[in-house]
Image (tube, rainbow, N blue to C red):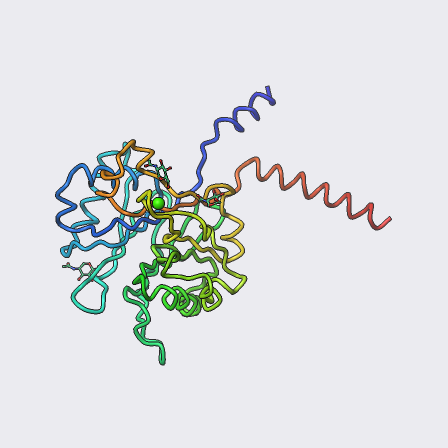
Length: 307
Ligand SMILES: *[C@@H]1O[C@H](CO)[C@@H](O)[C@H](O)[C@H]1NC(C)=O
Ligand SMILES: *[C@@H]1O[C@H](CO)[C@@H](O)[C@H](O)[C@H]1NC(C)=O
Ligand SMILES: *[C@@H]1O[C@H](CO)[C@@H](O)[C@H](O)[C@H]1NC(C)=O
Ligand SMILES: [Ca+2]
């Protein structure tokens, strides 16, 4: 009987990992919103995620968030599954503007604070085309209880400087908020001609050992079959956060293959694939059991070593 109970717990306890995604939805404006077949795919992509960062939102009236949240609610069943959204202001140096948006499942995470990086660091003003809109999430159901997400969509020609500058954003946010757990993600344009190999040494986010890059330099986040570039990246730091990353969860989501689209149809949605990873759920019964077990074993070993 006891065995049966243990067995059921093991096999039927729901997987509660948290999927975090980043997606450049190429030029998401009025024209695209008016194409239901495109919006449907975007909604299906978001519905796979618990936190989704969207970039290149160009629609100017803040209609994107409410529209997507409404469509997502239509897809899911209960109140508990509902999504919320936070959005940056319109960012850009001249008339060309974009917004960052975070859409998240409100039963799993909540927003503690948001911070629009001012990009006014003395001697280094206006380093970013689209300054990171940093969001501090509270995540009571994962192994790490809170983390900050720093989004970035670089201007391709300025990618090296902008990615390097994320280190200054990191120092600034660490001073402002009581957290060590960081996720940097977005379309960094971090590959091909925009970040030549020899320039990686000038990027502090890359050279400092406290940052782990989850998407590699040989990966391909582009939809076009004729290009292979690791433009979209995920970088994590903080011991708690790094340990909470689920092994083998890092993924480049090929929605073209998943939804059986032609390359042309996929390019109508975006020229980028989303990138994603998962955080482990907080320790359940079996983690507790395992920790008791390993403590005992460690204890015994230590005693043996002494005698
Ligand atoms: C859209 O939302 C952003 C962020 O909340 C705000 O700064 C901006 O004024 C809003 N724009 C409009 C047109 O309502
Ligand atoms: C993608 O390109 C490769 C060559 O680079 C080719 O072998 C393959 O058939 C192409 N795939 C599609 C789906 O067109
Ligand atoms: C990145 O590329 C490596 C080497 O080809 C591959 O093993 C790995 O699965 C790729 N990562 C993702 C997230 O696709
Ligand atoms: Ca490609």
